[in-house]
Length: 134
Image (cartoon, rainbow, N blue to C red; front, side, top):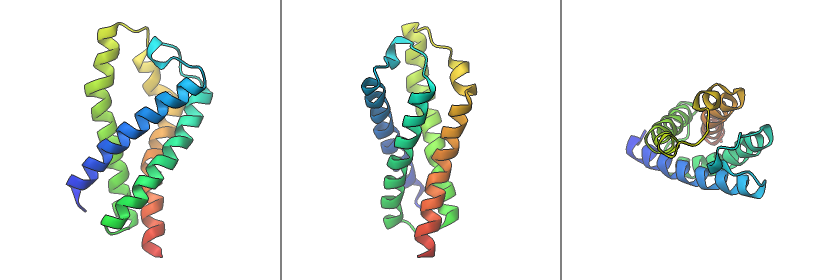
């Protein structure tokens, strides 16, 4: 697998997903930068939007890379790893510096967070498996 391409695609996916997530929150009238708690509706909608984004990007990626279940797993883990690193480097410090009233631990222990992680990893696995068998 082309790891450099996977990481670059992971960064692009993070940016697109972040912008889409903020847009969805805005459409739902939720101020994500004001420390407002993320409700179930926002989680669910953003998970579904994320699946579409990750699915489309994974589909494109497997035009450049051999589509297999294993490569899909690697890509999904790269998406998760890049997201975790970029959150740690960009989002968490911003929240801490701004002093926003956000409970960071609550975000990461929320069951919806782990459902999102599962979707982030599973989507490219399914795309890689499906494209590889056809």
